[in-house]
Image (cartoon, rainbow, N blue to C red; front, side, top):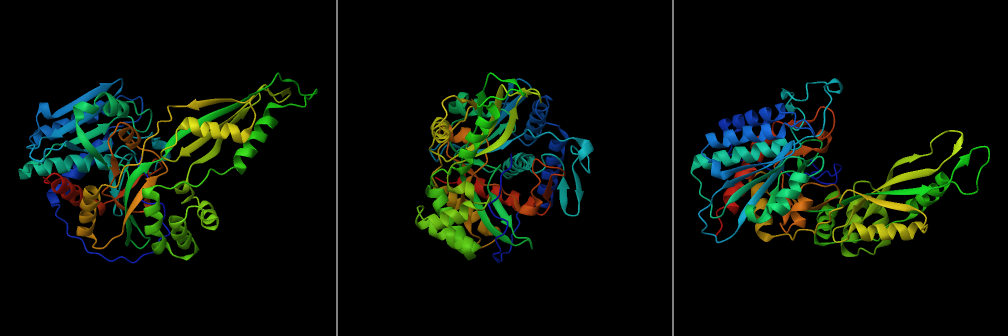
Amino acid sequence: MYKSLMHTAAVAALLIGGSAHAASDADIAKTREILGTAVSFETSKGLGNVPKLAAYLAGELKKGGFTDEDIAIIPMGETAGMIVRYKGDGSSGKKGIGFAAHMDVVEADPKDWEREPFTMVEEDGYLFGRGVLDCKFGVSTLVATFLKLKAEGFVPTRDLVLVFTGDEESGMETTKALSYDYHDKIDIEYILNSDAGGAALAPDGTPVAYAIQAAEKTYASFEMTVTNPGGHSSRPRKDNAIYDLATALKKIEAFEFPAEVNEITTRYFATLGPIVGGETGAAMTAFAKNPKDKKALGILRASPEYVGTTGTTCIATMLKGGHAENALPQAATATINCRIFPGTKAEETLATLKGVVGNDAIEWKLLGDGTASPASPLRDDVVDAVTASVHAAYPGLTILPQMESGGTDGKHYRASGWPTYGISGIYMKMSDMFAHGLNERLPVATIPLALDHWHHLMTNLGSQK
């Protein structure tokens, strides 16, 4: 799922830059061809179309000079993962570099859309279609860059490896397989993820900052259930499953997890504070200096944009209870969705919630696997390469480390031992963010920027000794 380019759209910094596009008209046309074809494959869960998209991509890569030995499609039920290796000469003596994206998309009902969701169309400077942003643009630009480098005769000093998953939007089973079962075979040092990070534009189209996503919070949902013998509603009991659950929920509502920081969030707030300015910017600067500053923490936690960066959050999202309007409830259940700060396990968060509620009669259940992953260290080689790429288009643009409150394939990559960095090539206004929504769209103007971005990164990092 494509995540926020940065946490704020309210920033108004006037950072002026020019752009020097190396991408040719032919490169742009090829990327649009691949993207349009990719969108035409309805790769939602359960339809069995991900392997078809993978086969199409493999065919394009073979036309461009890659061999059967370079390409592996890994079937998994109705979906598939894909690995493409651009072989280096080994002169760096290092493992390869991974470049990640996912081939699947969330569902789209044509009757709800203004346009056919699985036919890419251009209108008013935008490309529309399901997955055109999340994440088939990443798939298409990475494949197009591999084709361009191959045509140029580029020989990297280490392998460059495409790592494409087929169910990021659902179970992430292909992600787990590539991360754990194929970890040694893929044989890479770290991953650059096209499904996160990128540059945010102000409402006037001016670039504000470029975000490098280097950590993700752990996604974990818990069901809490209160049971009761029930009975006839004309004979009320003092204990009531719905009331007991409501009492527990009010305790969770009133509780705040302690503030937490790491290298990424500290640098994020320290960098963004002067740009944002005002009371919020001052709070960012103060919090970066002292996470125990209660006033600063209060200001940041009052904002939905920034609360997730200050520590673990847990919030009630679903309710169900009772079985008849004239009967006492025999059970009442609430779903609590948590976004857990890196370094804390789901089990530890559950223990905290149990302590807050203080009712041993409540039954708790973890939904899903609650995989925790560490923050990735801010490697100088990656940060320097990204900075050089961004500044080639917009000199002096602020580079901002970011912790994602949502989730991508990166959580499993990091958990398996691969440091992972979200560094999308997209430059976009937050008002244009329609990933997962109706009429998903992508600014046409970002295509050459993204192609230059990936070409610069692959040639830079792929040439280092």
